[in-house]
Length: 167
Image (cartoon, rainbow, N blue to C red; front, side, top):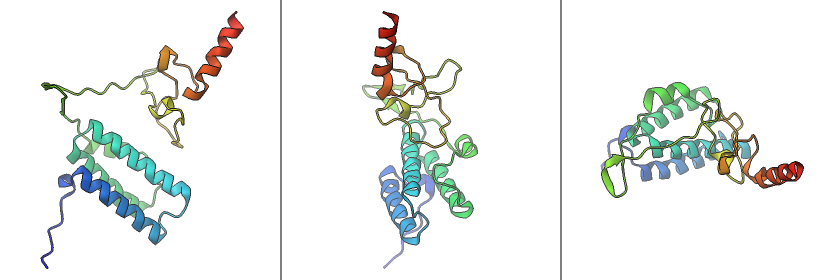
């Protein structure tokens, strides 16, 4: 049986990456490199971040970033989902994917910012909130023009309390 040549990281497709990512998780668990629920959650957070990168960066650049990150994590044994700002700046390149219905336009990703100009955490806007231990994004609620420092699930309670106080 002929062995296939090893695929270069930048040539891996997203479906191939998804399958490989799960096989890698299984292998890490079998070897004991991922042994606690916290380790699994960290790996899942890393996977989620890669998924977000696929939405705004070119697939080859995300694959190169991921390949380098995994090599470093294997050698240095840092926690999964540890930020790699150098890798982000060095490897990731914006994508020029056309939007639906108009091949001439480019999808632009609007990342809301807080009053200090810091990017707002998208996970914080959900009912479950942000689960990152060291989130680099601003934790303010953005729906309904609120921009207060509370998670979504507390918004109605807080605004109801404020309106009761002001009456």
